[in-house]
Amino acid sequence: MTDENDGSGTGNGAGSGAAGGGTGGGGALDARFVVGWLTRAAESVDREADRLTELDSAIGDADHGSNLRRGFAAVRDTLERDRTDTPGAALMLAGRQLVSTVGGASGPLYGTLLRRTGKTLGDARSVTVGQLADALRAGVDAVAQLGGAAEGDKTMLDALYPALGALAAAAEKPTGEAFTAARTAAEEGALATVPLRARKGRASYLGERSEGHQDPGATSSALLVAALAETAEATAEAGAEAADE
Image (tube, rainbow, N blue to C red; front, side, top):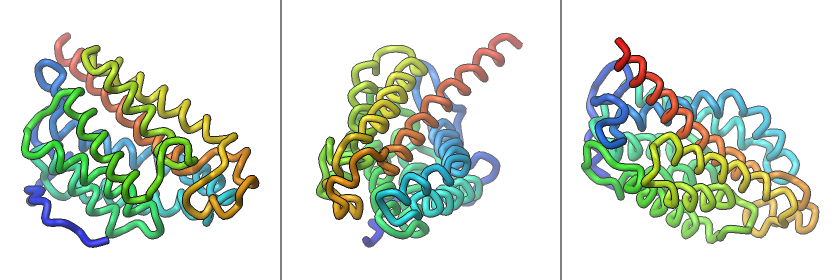
């Protein structure tokens, strides 16, 4: 899968790798928020890598956790090193890093998710929850097209599409509440893959034997959405503390 000329606008930077300050007025999400989200996702994947690999050992290649751990560690290091001034640029940079670092299907799929989301956001220096939800839908739709999968096929889409629906429905609510709704939907979607029969990927070769196992891709996708909710919560807490000073 070749990289595209995305014009992500990165350069040398320091610290968090982002300009800006988390969430601006009206719940706007800037580059620092996105970098914080992806950094938190890397920490979560590292913490849960063994569990992801255990899930994958039942119906896949037993490498999902190790592959994502390596890929998101590279994302974290890249975002710490390279400055990104917009949410879209941060997502594009992270997506390219995943494609170049992660083997198997996970790299192209997660890379496509982040790159298409970032490309859809464009050059905006901050975005609303609703705008991010729309961009994420473009990213998830691109993943579905790339993998030829649909919701119900026992893939990452079974966590991502429910999360998108919940996020879009709650987009006008407080930021933390909206992302928490998405997290709950993603986690419930991942759990709901247990009785499903896999229709895509290596797991599909198992037929009925794929039933009774939670899909590792849906599980890692739920971790990504959970990291988004945790970042919103941490940002809100930091803002409240700053206001009290």
